[in-house]
Structure formats: C-alpha cells, structure tokens
Length: 370
Ligand SMILES: Nc1ncnc2c1ncn2[C@@H]1O[C@H](COP(=O)(O)OP(=O)(O)OP(=O)(O)O)[C@@H](O)[C@H]1O
Ligand SMILES: [Mg+2]
Image (cartoon, rainbow, N blue to C red):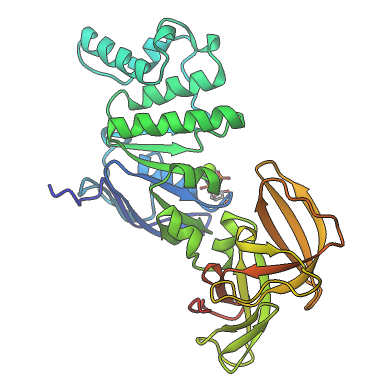
C-alpha cells in the first residue's frame, strides 16, 4: 500500500433526520499518524458524522474507506466492532465494577500474559501505572479520562474517534491532558478524528482542521491556513474576535479610515467588509496629533480615542472610537497596556492581515488585496 493512502476517507456522506440534512455531502480524509479536528458550532453535525464513521449510525448516502478499503456504503456494511476504530466520547463511562486494569483490558484478545503486558504498557504511557488495581471511583476526573484513553487505545485501533473528550475537565487539567493524549496518540501512530467546538482546542491539537457549518465542510486545511486565510467572514470570526471595516467600492478602490484598499473583484457601488483581527491592529502614540508616518506594510494610520481598556492577563484589549466615522475598533496588545479612556492614539492595520469579503448578502468572497 502506498504511504499516501488515507487511513480514513469519507466520501459524500449525507445523513438526514425527519427530512432535514444534518450532515450534507461531507467528504474528507485523515492521513495515518495525523490529527484532524472536525470543528464547528453546536448542532452543525459533528457528532452525527462521527457516529456514522463509528458505525453506530448509518448514512443515507456516501461511502467510508479505511486504508483504501470500503467498509460502508448504503448496501455494504462492516459492523462497528470490526472497523478497527477506537471511540472516546465526552461521557466516556468506565465500568465501575471493573478495576483500572480490567477496564483497559476489556476489548483485548490474546493470552492473559499478553493482555497484562499491553495493559501495563498503556497505563505506564498515561502515567497511571500505580493505579492498576484501583477502581474508577478512586480516581479523579482527569485520571479516569486517561484510563478511558488507555482503554480505547488498547486494541491498537487504526483510527481514534474522539468526541469532545476533554470537555468534562477544568481548564488547567484540560491543557495537560490534551497534550499528554496527543503524545500518546502519536506514539501509537493512530489517525485521530477529534470533534470539538473550541477553536483553541482545534488549533492546539490538529494537524488539519475541517471547519463545519450547517452540515457542510466550509474549509479544510492546516490551522495556520484557516486562521490566516479564512474563506468567509464567519470563518474568520470563528477563530477570534474580528473588526469589520465596511466600505463601498468605487473604481476598484474602497475608502477606509486607513486609506484606500484595492478591491478589484467587486462591482462599483457594492459594499465590502474589510476584516482585521484585534491582534493585528497596531497602536502608536499621538505625538501632538501628528501620529506615525505611513509605511508600505501598515498603510495610512488613523486617529482614534481610547474608549475602554481591559486587562486580560497575558494581553490587554483596548477599544477605540475612530475619529474618521465614530465606529469602534478593537486592538489587543501584549502585556499590560491600559491607557485612560479619552486618550488620543493612532492605529495602523497590517494590510497583509486584512481579509476582504463582500458584505453579507452580496455573493462570493473576493481576493484579498491591499
Ligand atoms: N437521532 C436524531 N434524531 C433527530 N435529530 C438528530 C438526531 N441526532 C442528531 N440530531 C440533530 O442533528 C443536528 C446535529 O447534531 P449533532 O449532534 O451532530 O451536532 P454537533 O455538531 O455534534 O453539536 P454539539 O457541538 O452541540 O455536540 C442537531 O440539530 C440534532 O438535533
Ligand atoms: Mg456533538
């Protein structure tokens, strides 16, 4: 088999409930050793997609392949237990009457000694060797989570399907267990499909993100690409707060507080949204109203007055009211920077960090241009 055969591939999967398509023509691939995150807002069809792949639900149309072999279409169907798929769900329920070792060994076949060896190996991996003979109620939530991970990995699944597996944990613990889980999964060489509605989790875990909305995949790629080249305004807004500067196209150009933007693919008179993340708004001092000089990257600076500044820990969020048109623009700055409301300042936006889209209701995205 060639190394480029996807571990998992789903093609044109559709699943409807009561005539409503909650998964609508979804296709994607997960490569061996890779973590793909299915990311999207609540109700967009993530869990349904996962259940179809696991074989606990059945698609209306479409095919599923593992290592290039068809395992399920609308006629033919390999049962869930023969798909070599490991499952880990939010409510991962360990068996309360079985010890940690017995929980992990649950899906294993082979001799007693082989099973014991595999159980010990996995518990060592997840750093729980000392709890091998304890019972689930004697462990913390995070420890139980790691036992569930060991249990899911024990039969060496080719694919791990994980549905919001970390959502029951508090923040600090979650970061730790996420990283540890990722390490164990990579060591085991499993391909992972992880469902989450949290962009931070997806960016932390994923080699690739499939962004889902209303049953469809709207964009797929490396986290860097989704963050830096979103397909539309909603995709941009999914990953962080955004600023929207609205303008009207006139002779290929759009006038903004930050000078003119080239917006060539848009007809005259149409409205465009120029999107910039608060992290990419630069701040400079007033210098008695003179402000900084324009530069090729940052374009023309615009004057604004501080409306409010909030301390957020590792960064501060400052809201400005623009002199130009009275709109509000947000900027995040590293560390503590808390100017008083009413302070005049100058803002600049990195043009290569701007995304230009037609205002909602005006058709398709145009090329980003500066
Ligand atoms: N068995 C079912 N019968 C009817 N409707 C269903 C069924 N399962 C899911 N749905 C509907 O399908 C839609 C998608 O559900 P799904 O659980 O896949 O969403 P999700 O993306 O996992 O959301 P969340 O992030 O909240 O878990 C929802 O509107 C849900 O109500
Ligand atoms: Mg779900």
